[in-house]
Each structure stands twice: as C-alpha cells, then as structure tokens.
Image (cartoon, rainbow, N blue to C red; front, side, top):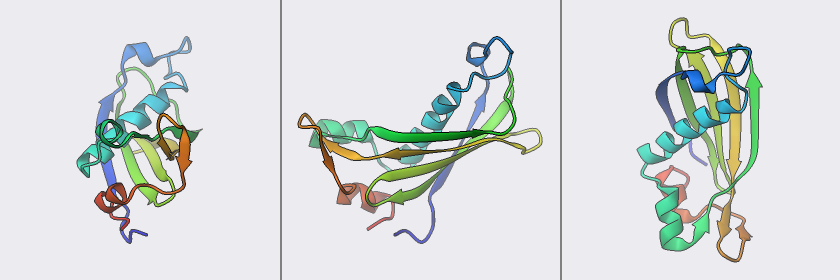
Length: 139
C-alpha cells in the first residue's frame, strides 16, 4: 500500500445549467464534479483508463458512489474539488472534497469505487493491473 496518498485539485465555477428549481446545484451534478477531479488525478499520474481499455481490453466501471451534501452550491460559486486516491490494489477508491474558494468551507464529500473488468467477457478481475498500481504508487 502507498505510504503517501496521491491527491489532485481542480478549480470549477458552478454553471447555471447545473442548478435545480431551488437555484442550488442539483445533487446528481456533484458526481460530475467528482468525475472531473478523478480524471484529472489519474491524468496527473499518467493513468489513462480509456487508452488502457483500447490497449488491454480492460474497463474500469464505477461500482459504488457516495456523497455527503454539507452546504449547497449556487450559481457562479468558485470551488476546489480535491480527489484523493485511497486505494489501488483490489479496486480504485477515490475520496472527494468540494470546498468554496471564498471561505474554504466544505460543501460536499464523496467517494467512488472502481474495479477492473475484462471486456467483452465482463469478467471481474480481483486486482488492479500492476502497471496502473505502479503509476499510482501501489507496487
């Protein structure tokens, strides 16, 4: 297991089209923000899951998500979305934190879990491939 957790942060401004009729960010859009940060985290460490699929025929579906909504986001809120890799052995586990730039208040926390699946057989592999683990510091 990696001794130091790898993190990456992205900055976002809440767009109007993410709002619900109450003029706050619709709850499902938090997963979009998590995805942006998760993709940036993996890119930062040289992990391109789509290219990996093209090369190895292994996909990495998300099998579990969770979100704790703490404080609602509104139109044009400037936020930082932090993605932190928690595990990359059996599955890819990433924790998220969304905080406002203005006062650093935490607005949401979340987690996603992904597994490796051989395609087209749809056979779940019970470990993350070694080359991906190595890039992420889980040799």
